[in-house]
Length: 374
Ligand code: GMT
Image 1 (cartoon, helix red, strand yellow):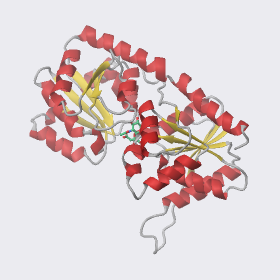
Image 2 (cartoon, rainbow, N blue to C red):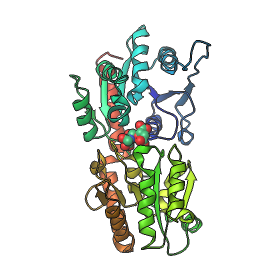
Image 3 (spheres, helix red, strand yellow):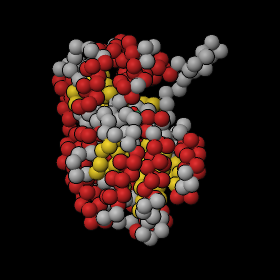
Image 4 (cartoon, helix red, strand yellow):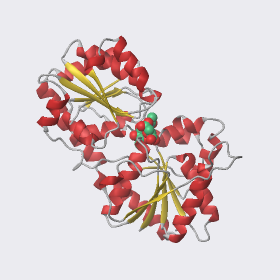
């Protein structure tokens, strides 16, 4: 099939899913057209059957704000028409699904639109009164709507009561790429022998509670020699640095910035921390699990669907001491930590392996094309 794939190109869960899904589909022989304002993060890993179409936004003296939503809509129309797309798959409701709706209105034939809801488009940004009606429009007018966890299906139904099915298609992980590696050289570069390595990967937004990550680590490192690796970047970076300094752990907290080969860092670490305030799924936790890491996280949103019994610990987001205690318990018994890590990989692949999930998207595309919507 010929598939248009729209997502945020930068560091962030929904963009990663869009790119990884496009690559998986391309490997399965589909023609995938990525459409965005920048070259998608992680797209370097796949080249065959893939094209990238850049959206440029005109500047004009009356445009105080660049009209990205409109430029994206025009680009979607162009790519859909000239590349004869069978389906357009947009990730994150705002503004992508709204642009897709406009493209569909302008398209001379029929253009099938699949919208995947990722989380904050429903739970945070999408609830802004100025934006909520557009989320309703996106949900109502897409030909298929999917959400990445049962929690998000439910949250969407509760907050946007639109009469239409919302299908559960969870996020997925490539178990060949995200796997335990035993890379002792990398491990030796990251910490001293005998030290435990705690890892957090995110876009450092307030919802991730980066300061809580540092606080948990500060409590762990007084009980066990350890280091904290922070991968990613975002607005909460300076505050986390300040917190680390205030807690006297700055020399043990390493800000590694955005990393292309995050799977290698995951495989070299011992435990993954994700004490988020809100998390519709927790893709980074899933990837860490596939690399054989136990996860200590908040019991919020869709995380209990991912971090299941025996693969880590889920605590009250406010109970940082509880999360620190759980991390120490896991880290101080290496046999138990390894067992949990192995269970985490098994759990990740049993439910969320790419081979299980990607065909579900293909089935949706085929269904829409078959219905004559495409
Ligand atoms: O919070 C992020 O990491 C960014 C955000 C996004 O849309 O880019 O992530 C959301 O989508 C991810 C992929 O489906 C989910 O794994 C994250 O749980 C979700 N984030 C939140 O719900 C806060």
